[in-house]
Image (cartoon, rainbow over all chains, first blue to last red; front, top):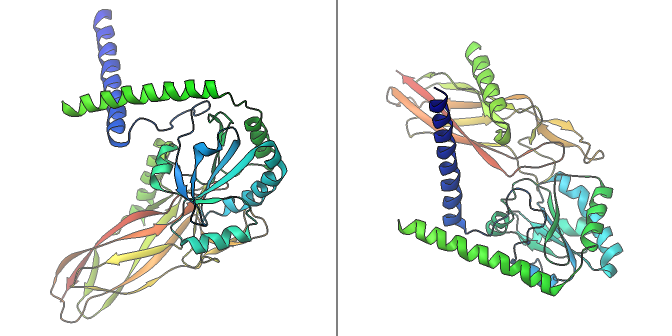
Length: 210
Length: 157
């Protein structure tokens, strides 16, 4: 009787594991493996190149060696408006220590309207036009505001969703600034990520041919 | 009324069972709408905004905010003569105490006036559409969403 119960539990666990792995591989097939999910602290920040409001292209990895505050926002998000002047102040205060603030507008509004809004908020940092891909790469950014704090080595130090107090934001900025930039370690992190990426792509390709 | 209450209770139960992905707005089912050819009928659509959410009214105070809009696509046998939205409530939130937003929260109803032309053939027709809205809670805003809307209209001679 006990044996039957154990077999049943084992079967249930096996089925659940198969369902979970199937769902994961399906996601890998559709989107590729280098997406953020779950606890993102310590994970390499997915690289991107986005167009800014002035028409220039901005690539995240160009800021390696600096701490980056990456804020996803939208003009239709009232809580986002509260944070923007704080980000502008922090940009001024910590720029000399190596802070870079980047805003990513997840907006359907025209760039002119976004630029006008950002100017009214006193934004003094680059505002980039968000895409579905960058949102997806950062774990499907649905809730705004969402801010990622990225260390000098390109690894994510913290992720905060929703409006927080200024002191919490400043503490996260300080944590990101306190990280060290060691190119050799960065290369190791990126190499590990690449190996994982290649392995997952192989699994996905094999799975797709079945 | 009982049906509406039951539908909301069922919706509420579903909400509590699926906390990770709660829809900010649900709609009570609409009974079969009877309208005579040549007449217009006020169809009341009842919606409920989840307790921790609010959505912009049809006339938010800023053009950048996304208004709540009901879009209906009736079949050719009937028309939508008018859609009447309720007035929103002016509310200021902790995230911006000096600013008032015009919002819907709790229960609200939209009146859709369905007209059957005099020559409309008798029969039962599905009116489909969607309620487009954008919800926020006290600290987070959610992307714009669309809630499917559907009801059946029976035209009698």
